Length: 357
Image (tube, rainbow, N blue to C red):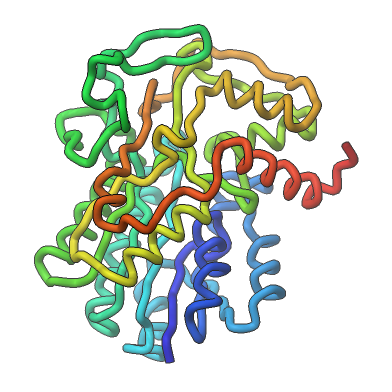
């Protein structure tokens, strides 16, 4: 039997992985205890998505296990053993704001939880491919020291800089910079995943995501800005834009496109690799530009305000360079642009919220 195991399976990337791999594996095992509701309250709950997965995929099996507890993970790995061919580790505490509230929780979920998963992989299914969803926050504030130019709607990198054409590559330093505690815990996990590939020869890969988005995101104020922005556009709830005049730029990748990157890697793994993974020059926007798009798509004027205080660890301009991944896997490409993604998010959210537009 061929099995894919997905942590954070009711979250955005986890649920997309379940849907994608349910057609390619005999069984998909999901591990998710809905800590996201603890992090972000009712807005962040993924129970609805867990139930959707159970109803939609007959070869999906859900476990409400805590990745911080080996005693809850080990029985799962012992039961399925070497039948596990792929592990997608997408469970995380994802907010740099929230991490400062409970550093122990943040670190044990992001760093210790990743170590637990790697050890379960090594002890019970060492030939399985291990894919880790890291973050561009591992680069800390280093992107903010690039030569940036303010335009009418966004910050942009100077045209003379090597990063202008394609964005930031994997050689940017992750050292000597402020990360936020979230960024630091993800750095620890990121390096662990690389080390298990390089030291033990395991088939591990790190994908440093830009803004990951899609229709199944449980967006909340502290995480999932496009999803939460669209939710506020639909409901009329107030949205606060923090710092940088709302001109900070993010690249955005649809969850399907990211999981398709995982699939390409799985078919030809390169142990210990690191890839930047985002919308690149194909799909990026400033907060201001995203708000305007959400208003156009929803047909509603947003209820929003600016705060002069930026979030600690926030990037002013970040666009991922995917050249390395595309050189290794030339058959991969994006399938969704920004507008397509936002329209899909809008339609899904209207249905989910039962809002009449």
